Figure 1 (cartoon, rainbow, N blue to C red):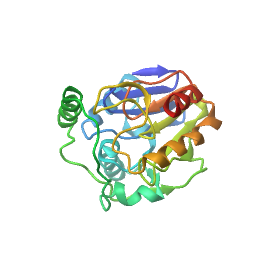
Figure 2: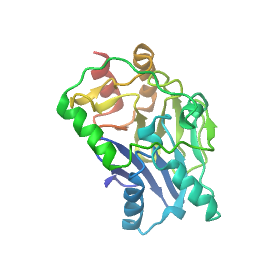
Figure 3: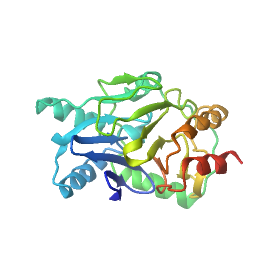
Length: 239
């Protein structure tokens, strides 16, 4: 689905991933669930492109509903002779490889929202996580050699290596689970702190790192795209 010129989303408001589409190729931001691979191929086909046009994948963190099809696409690209790098913050590399597990705690839940989330995840292959076997690590402040010149913003809290990705070309910041616009456990809609966060206090502090981007689009891994600007999104969460 096209959100704006050069900016596309696959998945839905439950789990989403994004594409930056340029004349130089495609950058994929997050890889959703394994079953989103078919959605990726369909979106590329609609644009007259194939997976060979993907230049790299950036993961906002290493959780299973964000690494989805990344290993499959990476491995297939190697066999095809045009390896696609998968980037993740160095503090989440072990998580993306399945070596470290996220913290768990008590969360507020509503039955309908929970069933919707887990039902969708199962339909998209979420019962089996495909961990990465090889990653390229990144740190705060790096600008990657990928279409759109994405810049990494360290956002520790949801996980130690959570990041946001700023892409001025599309006036957007991709936030993963640094915040949510649809709580998958309660169904509440609007900018808010994300559930399943390792360190909620640190996650709130990290939100200030988004402000210098002044981006219009705030694009989370869960929930509708938010076009009210990053300053307003942060204000609503911090109020």
